[in-house]
Every structure is written in C-alpha cells, then in structure tokens.
Length: 111
Length: 115
Image 1 (cartoon, rainbow over the protein chains, first blue to last red):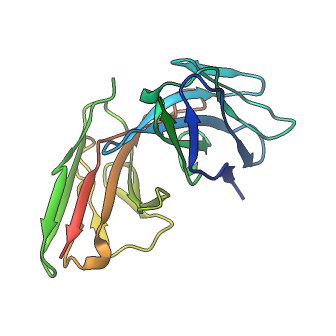
Image 2: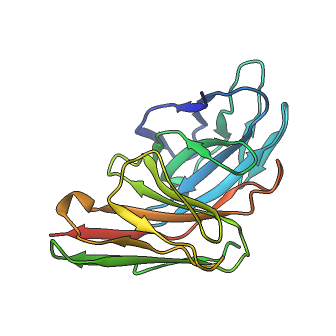
C-alpha cells in the first residue's frame, strides 16, 4: 500500500544551521510528493511539491528532490531562521484523491 | 492564496451538545476533506467528498457526519459531543484533476474542547 515515513522529532537547531528532514515513501508508480508546513495555531500550508522523478521543488529557501531510486523526498534548507520553527509534514498523492501524510516533524530554531 | 475558511476557530462546549463545524471554499474545488489532528500532530482522515452529494468515511472511525449539498460547503456535525471528541479539526480542498493540480489547501482549523 501507500505510505510515508518521515524523520521523528523534535528537531532543535541553532539559527543559520543546516536542516535536513528525511522522508521516504512506499507507492507504486509515480505519485506526487509534497512538503507542508504548519505554524502554531494554524492549518497546513503547502511548502513545495514535485510531480515526477528528479523534479526539485523549492520555496522560501527550502528544497526537496524527488528520488525514485531511493523513494525519498528529503527536505533541506541551508540556513534556518527562528521563523522556520514549525511542524513539517511530508505527503504523497495519486491524482489528488487520497493523500497520505507522514506523522510530522517538529522543528525549533533557537537564536 | 488559498481561500478556505473554517468557523468557529475555537469552541468549548459541554458534553451532549450538538455542534456543526463549518468549512467553505471559494476555489470551486470538487474534492473536500476533514481531518482530525491529535496532540501528537498526526493527521487522521475522517471524511471526504469528491463532489456534490458524494461523501465517504475516512480511515479513522468517527461519530461525526458530513454533508455536501453545495460545492463550496462541507460542514461536519457531531450529534452528541463527548470529551473524546476534543481535538483540532482541519478542513481541506483539492482541485484534484490529474497529476499536476492535486495539492490540498487547508483551512485554519477549529480547535474543539468538550468538557
């Protein structure tokens, strides 16, 4: 079946540190892959997405590359800021029907 | 910018009350979803709809019901609230046509507390 596994948190980093949040998926074929971000007290916001192998999604300094060979979609940012403190969700979807979300990774960035 | 709204944002009610959580979107999306988010952050799909007069139960068993009489509106109702219903409820919608326009857009959520 389809599933998403992401790195467990919480993750605590100092400002300007490098961020990686691992995400791997199980699915047949080529699903679309997403990263969502949730700030305290809010709903989820789409951060970036990729729809085919080797695609790189990017937004606000965050990047993730769709790796079919390793079934991965790791989230990276070169220099995190305090304002990046949030919960990050990896997800996959087939044609926008059912979505499969990871369990979320909490990130805290300290000054 | 996504236009999906949820009301109320916060609700505290007593056990046994009937409540309806409202969700509306102005994007003309066919597909709409309700998730329950537990304190550990994990999202659980409780209901979804692929269009008017179409509703299905999700993966998590829920005592709530939904209706989809209009494309833009997808309310969730609890006939008799209990403390176990205390949670964050998130509504989402998706254009969901094909492979390239299939991301979900989320509302701000309703935090429900049942005393």
